[in-house]
Length: 326
Image 1 (cartoon, rainbow, N blue to C red):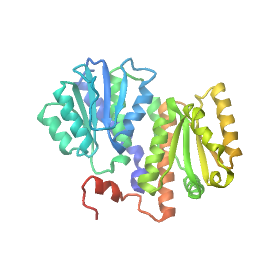
Image 2 (tube, rainbow, N blue to C red; image 1 turned 60 degrees about the horizontal axis):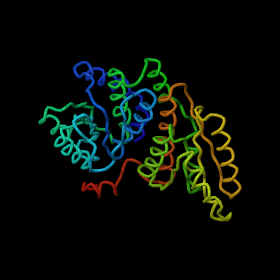
Image 3 (cartoon, rainbow, N blue to C red; image 1 turned 30 degrees about the vertical axis):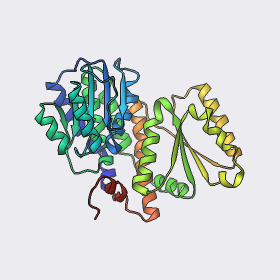
Image 4 (cartoon, rainbow, N blue to C red; image 1 turned 180 degrees about the horizontal axis):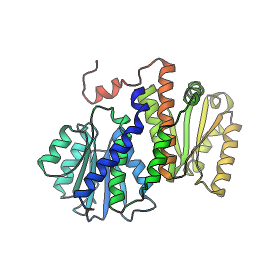
């Protein structure tokens, strides 16, 4: 697992090349909606893309994390089926439904049944290198599509943006991940961040803590948490003292939201819970997102080591997928 984290930056140039080659022979489809379908580690790239596309793409972009297609999918819909292994049940079922609805289908995978079905139907396919746990292939899954969408005119991704992301992924974290892991190991952790920026970050941290460290956490979005979750901090001090509220902070908050966050932090502290703030670093949106994502991957890895568990093994997931557990 450590090798996959250390070498994540190597995926970005490869993914950009894959996307560039794909876009040379595949012009942008004429569609009115985009639906990204995937599960687990193969779906987080869709969440990142949704944030990246929000300010530039005129076509609505939605995420589907289930085995059923929405009723509105039609021939003017681009359905992206994402399964790194190519054998995830839900995207395969969605693929079959999309074909029946005559939607335009784009598959992104390293092989498996999805690659076979795409090949049999002459579908559009982004083929990725294999041999990586899906949750560690976030570079391939995200930046191949980012490059394609950039060539299609749906978002902006400059060479400078790419270099900044690479800088975030080549960062020497020093002792920071282990220090954060030690702190978080003593609490029940709850993650908070902005709806229009941090949603993929919160999802990633929660998923990586579960898969790598075998630790359950919770997450909530700002400003929604100001309208419900904050009331839960009227707890008496003994139970609240077990909570660590982690606020992911970003330069895009603005003065009004920043004031609200400060007020919320005071209420959390008043309950007896502990507050931790983590600030994004970088200029571009993608660099700031991947700063958070990469830090979370390392913290979850260090937390796994502290707890004496193997971050690579996922026995419960394997059991539910019907795989043999070694």
